[in-house]
Amino acid sequence: MNTFRLLLLSMSVALMGCQDEKPQEASVDEAPLEIEADSILQEAPLVAAIDKAELVSNEQPSNQEAWSGTFTGTLPCADCPGIDTTLVLSDDNTYTLEQHYQEKGEAPIRTEGLLSWNDTGDTVTLLGEHAPNQYHFSDMMLTKLDMNGEKITGDLAELYQLSKQE
Image (cartoon, rainbow, N blue to C red; front, side, top):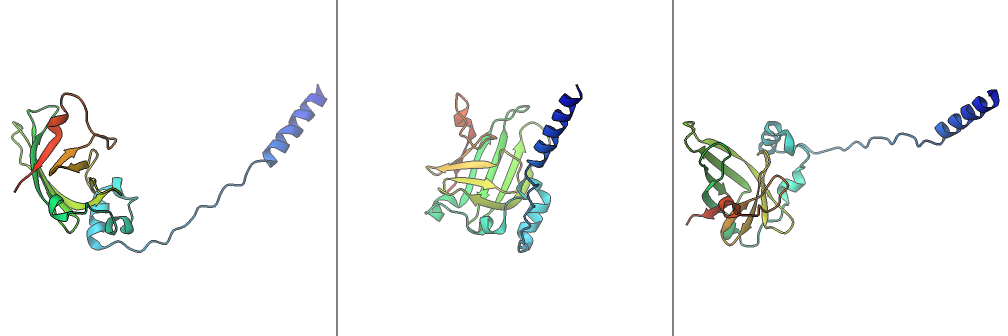
């Protein structure tokens, strides 16, 4: 019995010696973000991982005149008839979003911030907004995407579109 315990103890010590050392944490020296980006990142911790390079060098659709402008529509609402939505995308990579919840008797909610395009230039993310905060751009329309950044399918899919105003 003592031999078994001694063998078990020896194996335990040997296994503990085989463990990898804890990897050292890398430190990254980051340049401070511009004031506008700082205010957005402080208000919205969900975008804190986005760095300045991504904000500045995002891919925009090739035809800036097509995507910059005002998009409006009524999006579905879980506890009201709909959300009257106006989204203004500006060519300086900023946005203004105004949402009015119908029959709630509340003032419209207005937010502003920076926007970022995906690599293919067809999906815009509103930085500083809580998810779902992405819209797919196509045919002079913005289609709101779901929590996972996917297009909404089914009978209600058409209700998630914002049309560009002339």
